[in-house]
Image (cartoon, rainbow, N blue to C red; front, top):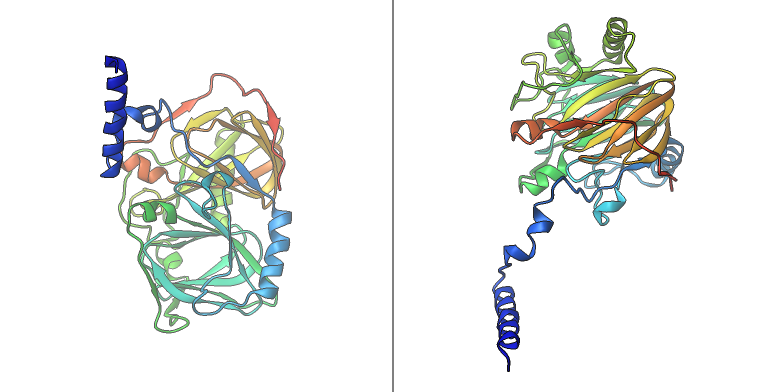
Length: 360
C-alpha cells in the first residue's frame, strides 16, 4: 500500500467516523455556507388574480370555516421552497376568503400579521376588542399575541391579502398559538385606534432607515384615503421621478409598523420605469391598481390589478407601468436593519431581458 493510498483511506475513515457522531467538517461546506452574495432558495414568482379569485370562490363554496380549521386561506407557495407554504424564506403570504355573513374564529399567535384589503367593504377585523372596519386599500395590523377575528357582514364574498412572519418565527423556534375561549371576542370599541392615533403621521417618504422599535404600532388601521393623499403629495413634490413611495409607520416612533414586518406603497407613473436595485431581504408585492411589468433577475413579469409577486433577497428588480400603478409592499427589512444586515445596491444600467415569466 502506497503512502497516498493509505492517506486516502484514513481520510475516508475520518469522514465516516465524523458522520457517525453527527459532526461535519466545515472545510467541506464552506463555499456552500459563506457565499459572496445571498442565494435564497425562493424564486421570483407571480400569482394571477384571475386564477386565485376563481379558486377562492370554489374554496368558499366547498370548505366551511370551523373551529379547528380557523381560517380559509390560500397560501402563496413559492416553488423554490420544496413544498413549504411560504412566499419567501422569511415571509408567509396568502389570500383569505370569507363568505357572506361568515366569521373567522378568534385566536392569537406569536407571529405578527398584516391584512391588505383587495376590494370591497363591510368586513371588520377585531383586534383585542377594537373592531376595525376594512375597506379596499386599507391596511390592518394584527400584532403578535393580539386576539383577532374577522367578520363579513355583507352578502358577498370578501378577499384580502394576509402577510405574516411565520417562517421567521418558526426558524427562531418561537411559535405560540392560542384559540380564544369563545368563538368571537367581545367588541369593546369600533375603530378606536384610528380615533386615538389616526391623526398623527402614519407614513414616511421612501422607507424607514434609522428608527428601530421593538413594539408594534398602536394604530391598527391605515386608511387608503390617507395613503393615497400622501402619495399625491409626494408626486407633486417630485414630478420628475418615475415613482414615489411611502412606508406605513408607527405614529409614536416613526419605526416600521411591526418589529418584523415593513409595509409600504409604491406609485409608478404611466410610461415610466424605476431604476433597478438589489436589496437584502425578501419583498412581496400586491398590485393595488394598475398594469405593467417588473424585470426580476432579467426575467419579465407582467402584472395587473390584484396580481401578487415576490422578489427574493438580492434579486435585481425594476418596475414599469403601462398606466399609473400602486404596488403594496411587504418586507422583512426591520429584522435585517435591527441585526445590521440590511444593504441595497443600485444597478448601473437597466437589466437585459432574458426571458418572460409564464404563470401556471
